[in-house]
Each structure stands twice: as C-alpha cells, then as structure tokens.
Length: 437
Ligand code: DLL
Image 1 (spheres, rainbow, N blue to C red):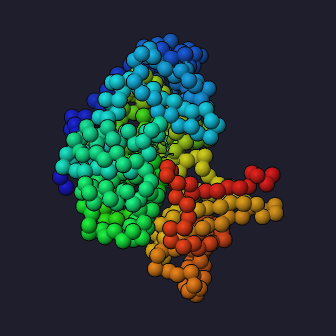
Image 2 (cartoon, rainbow, N blue to C red):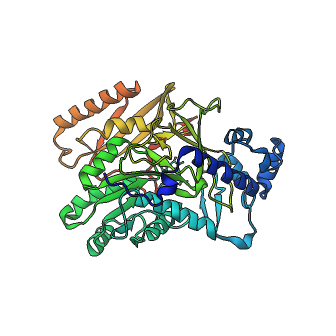
C-alpha cells in the first residue's frame, strides 16, 4: 500500500523524540494554564508552582484530573488563557444541564486544528482531486467547521452541505461529482435507506470514501455502510473539549485510530480507581491538549472507553493507536442488575442482514422490575404482512441478544425507515425508568 503522510517528519517521528516534544509542549501548556483563573488555583493547590516543577512526562500524574463539571463551573471565562481581543472563535456544547462548555480559539489555534484535520484527511488517501461533501452540522458543533477547514487545507473542493435533507444531498452529489463524504455513521445508513426510496442509482454517483464519527458504532456497522454505499469508511474520533474532530483517526490500514501525540497526551485509566491500566487493557481515555493556547485543558476525563494497541501500525506512523471507542463509562445501563452497553446490542443486530439500518433501545419499568425493548427496523425486502419470517427473525434477534448480554429483551420489528433519525448524533437509548420513581 502506498501510504500518504501529510508530514512524515512528525507522523513517523521516533518515539523518544516524540516524547521529548510532548514534554516541551506540556511545559508551555502549563505556562498557559497558569494564566487561567481555574488552573492557577488548581495547580497551586496541587503543589505545582510553575512548569519547572514538571521535569518528566511522568510528572503529569501530579496534576489533578479536569472534568466536564469543572468546565461548567468555570463558565464563561475561567479557562481562558489569553486576552479577549486575541480570541477569534468559540465552539460550545450545550450538554444536559444547560450550562454550555465553551472552548475559545486564537487565530493560531484554528490554524493548528486545521493542520491536524488535514493530516487525518490526507492519511486516508484523499487529496486535492477530491470533492468533499461535509454532511454534518455547522455552527457551535465542531464537526462542521473542523472538517471544513481540514478539507480546504488539503486543497479539496469542500461543499458545506450541513446535516439532513437527503434529497438535496443526493442532488449535490450528482451535480458536483462528490467523491468523499463526512457524516455520522447513523446518517450514512439513513442516506442509504433514502437512496432506494428516491430511486437514486449508486452508479450515478462518484463516491469513493466516507469519514464517519462523532458517535460510537461497531465494526459490523462500518462493514454494512461499506457494502451498501460502496465507500471506504474511516473512523474519526474527537470531542469539543479537545478542539473537536482531529484527535484520532484511522489511516489506510483501518485498524485502530492514531492519536496525534504531538498534539495530545493520552492516558488510559481505570474509571473507578483512576489508576493507569496496563497497556492493552480497556479503561477511560484521559487527554491533555498540547496544541491550543486560548483554552488549555489538562488531564481531561473524556468518559470514553478504549485501549491502546501495543504494537506499531503497518503504516509506520509512530503515534499510538486507540481501539474503536465502543461507549462511555457513563452510558452503561443497569437492567435488573445486569450491566449492558448499547454498543453490545449494536454489535449483535448490525451483523444480521435481515435487520435494517436503524434501531432503538427502550428501557422502562414493569412493576418493580426493568424491561428492555429493542426496536429494530427490518431490511427493505421483508414485509409486515408476511408474519412467519418476522416471528422467526424476532426470535433469532432475542436469542442472539440473550447470548451476548444475558438479558432476554422484547424485540419489536418496524418498517424500514420508520424510526426517527435526528439531525445530529443518533439517539440509541430511551430510558424512561427514572420518571416512574
Ligand atoms: O463529536 C467531535 C467530532 C465531530 C468527532 C465530528 C468526530 C467527527 P462532541 O460533540 O463534544 O464532539 O462529542 C464528543 O462523542 O467524547 C465520544 O463519546 C463521542 N465520539 C466522537 N467520535 C466518536 C467515535 C464531537 N469515532 C463525544 N467513536 C466523545 C465513538 C465517538 N464515539
């Protein structure tokens, strides 16, 4: 395979040099942190007086973790490290409490972010010959502008399509000869369902590849998108606290996501003990950003569960790879005492070709007990009035789920395209139990 590197000196940098670079950048990020009211207090309390107290990368452990609640408490300017007149943009996520976590950027921060995004995009084999349709929300969400800038940096023709409106999306693909897509995996599946309905022939499109991220999805879902849309799918991971997309991305080997270690320090800890897990073990990803001056964030608890690959990638990049992120430590459901991750359900059902492109997990109270209902769409060649194959399919799904999660859910089949598809991230779980208490 002919791998493409945006900057081989960085992407293939020997580990020792890379770690020395991390230490140097960490010190400068700590200097930035001391300019914020939040870290000035936090670091001083932890006995750190200046970046001189951080002598090795191991000293990072002396710094306390930062959480989403800290960011909310620091709203609006508690994490700002530069004068207001030097900020050129903000991105924010509203979250559930209504206090937005807000991240500010200087002009240089935006340039650096675009450069990481370009590295991700170019590493998939995309270049200035490509037409890139960015089908994700623009605005305060980082997915739209993040990919937009990266695409332009690579020299692609970028179509700022935004999310939703499949009819318009198909029209743009045909009009401009789109070769590369970016969307959530759930929207890519939805697109395929709508393509059949709209009578759009795959042969009339020039698609080669798609970037899919912003929400967890299984390897089976990737395979399904690849087969149905006939595109090469690359996993893309990021979070607004760490700029947005561009934190970790798959290369052409598509075997784990390279985390850009010249821009981030990644640790994986046990979410209960907060101690580092052994290499290769699953735990919660903790990130320190090294490439942003306006809003430094040190040891951020992402809540995302993953592990490091222990061996180097065939592409020869030295930046370590993360395993596909399957869920968050806070999205675990406890159903009648059994722990269930939504990703386990997805893994079971997306591997079945009779199952359509969308599903929903409902958890509700049934007297004192919990009841789990899995609603799945059927593939478009099954029909509601033909009951025998439907009963058999329900039973097949129920048994497969029971074998995987030790719970026997009620399975409900729905027509293809009938479950709701939000414009942003997919909503996979409806847990109504707390309302009954
Ligand atoms: O979702 C940034 C992004 C935009 C990433 C576009 C990729 C593509 P937030 O809205 O802050 O930022 O959500 C971040 O989404 O902590 C994960 O829980 C989840 N997430 C993002 N990418 C993936 C992925 C953007 N590839 C949160 N696999 C993160 C699994 C993902 N989960």
